[in-house]
Length: 57
Image 1: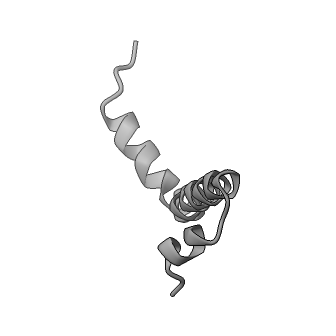
Image 2 (image 1 turned 180 degrees about the horizontal axis):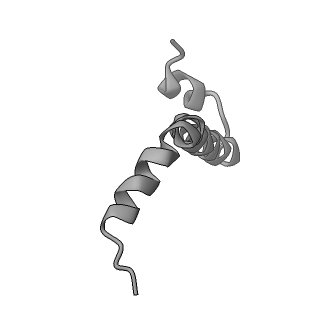
């Protein structure tokens, strides 16, 4: 595993901000992808649960 502190020790100030933003965006993508992959398979169960509580008029 790469040590972030050693990476930033050799980077300039602008590059440190760039590394931080890259890590932030990578984290967002890594967290979002499993949700997007599982949602289509779970959607029918979520829809049934919402419809059970619905009120017909």
